[in-house]
Image (tube, rainbow, N blue to C red; front, top):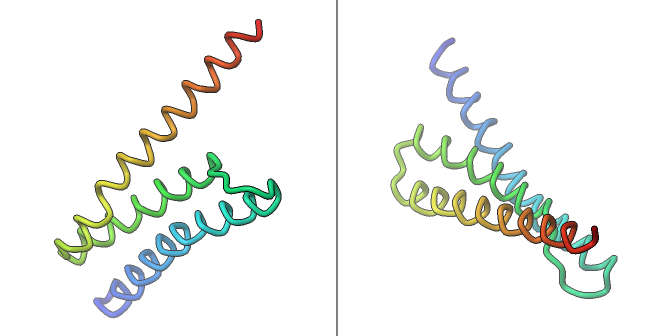
Length: 97
């Protein structure tokens, strides 16, 4: 792969990550509009972890410490929120039956 093609690959890869990261706000907004109140859905955290992971890889490729420090911690925060949601769902199912 030529350096020009490689550069376009990485730009496309980074844009996909940014679109996923932005997508989390779109799904959260739609869910909140449907509920007529502010809600944060599981998909918000899934989009966040996927987008942040892709953007972290992109930032590491670019060797951009500011971008790396801005994205990598979010992966752990989003994962922790998904774990909390899973635990809440399990507890709710356990109390039903």
